[in-house]
Length: 118
Image (cartoon, rainbow, N blue to C red; front, side, top):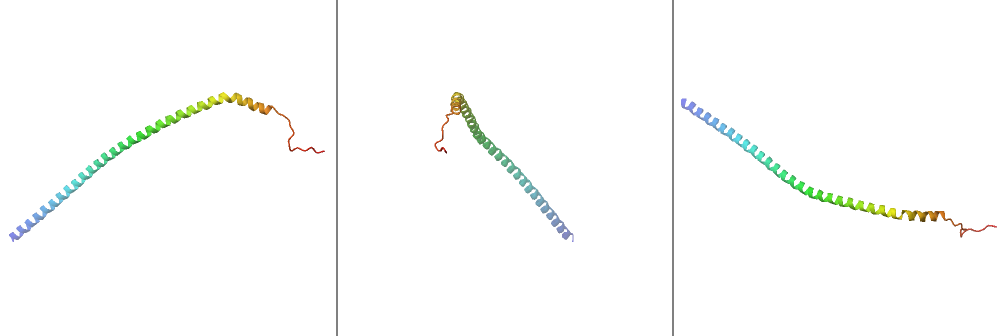
C-alpha cells in the first residue's frame, strides 16, 4: 500500500510540476507577446514620425512655392493698379472735356422722319 501511495504521491508531484511548467510557459508566452507588442508599437511610432517628417518637408516645399507665387501675384496686382491709376489720371481731363462738349453742344435739327402736317 505504501508503494501505491508513494506512486500516487509521485504522480501528483509530476502533475504539479507539469502544471507549474505550463503556467511558467504561459507567463513566458504572455511576456513575449507583450514585448513583441511594445516593439511593434515602437516601430509604428518610429515609422509614423518618419512619414510625418517627410510630409512636413513636402508641405513646406509646396507651401513655400505657393507663398512665392502669392507674393508674385500680389506684386503684379499692385503694378497693374498703379498702371490703371496713372492711365486714369492722364486721361480724366480730356475725357471729361469731350463728354461735356458733346453734352453741352446741342445742335437743334429736325428729325428725318418728321412730316409737317398742314
